[in-house]
Image (cartoon, rainbow, N blue to C red; front, side, top):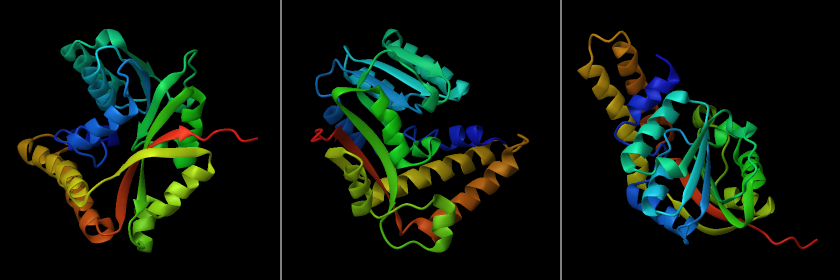
Amino acid sequence: MNRERISDIAHADHPIKSPLDDDSVRRLLERAVPGGNERVLDLGCGGGEWLLRALAMHPHLEAEGVDVSEGALSRARRAASDLGVQERLTLHHQKAEDLRSSQSFDLVLSVGATHAFGGLLPTLAAARRHLAPGGCVLVGEGFWDRAPSQEAIEMLGDFTDLASTVDRVVADGWVPVDGHVSTRRELDDYEWACWGALAAWALDHPADPDSAQALRTATTRRSEWLRVYRDTWGFVSLILRRAPDRS
């Protein structure tokens, strides 16, 4: 059972693949695209959930997304057609870091996908290449809310604390203009939804050859969350603008 299929099933009840609820997503998008006629790019768009919400909110907005998963892009196309926004959405099937566009964007977002670029700062460097003057970046990244165990670091990665994460962004030439730290409820709802959906799918499809693996994966991931990183890991979404060039 490949990782993409596991992810698709796990996110069936939580389509935003990060610990944010609907109100948080809406508020971040309202802040990031205040005019409603912006051009938006999602680097690592998956099924296009952020773009589809932005397009549904603003009838004059145009959006592009890039992802390596053809299956996810196909879902995005179907959803865009169902919403009637397909003419304002362009999708690219390729690595996000390889995208070359002749146009710039008022908002470049990458939430929960910084691993694809090798970390937070490389993600911001990629976003910078596509950003129009005066535009902003919406990026989502994990952080350590408390000192983690070595097991948690090996499992999730070598994050920093929230203040240090923001300091790194500022030192890289960005100014935070808004943000959202996922609440305990959002973090817990996300984990329960993911591993609950995967476990439920396994129980509902006992004859599927992947059923046993799906149930084992759900059990393992739920245990890792509860025992290893639930009390230490957090998630922050930042809206950033470029700092003025003082050279």
